[in-house]
Image (tube, rainbow, N blue to C red; front, side, top):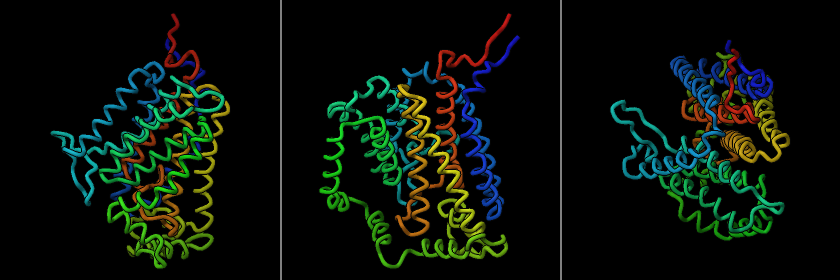
Length: 368
């Protein structure tokens, strides 16, 4: 007789699912209102994402820790390959074409789970002391953070590169690094800021110039109009003119938050913020029950910070408080790459939480 171990159910984190499903459902509802074709494609992305969630949930990550460095360096090779074999789109070379099937692959997206797994692997192998990591250990970990940062920034994809950089150092901040090191870093960033700005690409400088100028860009102006027209309770579908008359650009992805407020008003914005806020808070509070499980702590902290940055940047750019960059809302903006990446990350996290005891990976028992 074959039966599932009951401890899978008791240790599975259902609260994550209860927070993510409403975000996905509302996203599909809004996308289907704007474009039925995109909604049909989104269903396909949902199916792929769910399948990959299940796959990574059942992969015994703790038993395959030896494979993590291989996975990380394989992705570094893919990022290097973009320089020589990459496909250019809209002035950026970020994609690789898969032979024979003619699908494109964006290595920077695959790098996100590989990046977090590698940090988790390194920190588990060498956990911090009571005073945090010293300079030697900090520099060693920084190498694994800065290497993908420079490779992705060179594509150029400064947005994704900065996200990985911030996530990496936020994880180290939570895990523990000597305070003197942080002070030196902040002072150095302040002194080097003018040099860093001068080395940006022209289009990146333009985004910053548009951001600090008195008059926001066309996209941001239309977004602010859509947000303002939503009022407290929003508008009916036929009255959401900013979106349905195509004034609001990219209403299903980059500016879907503006369309959310146009449809559901201030109350809708509060609901979306509440779901994301509870999810981030829940992930961070898991660290208190994980204690010395540094591997899982890195994953929970990394995913929480990743969601926080994505939500913060996306919402800020829709209201004119950040430059317009292609940072989607997790599980909410239309598209496959971001959705699939987050489903993989949460599949890994659920695996680490559910199988974190001695029965890790043994999810089926056989009675004879």
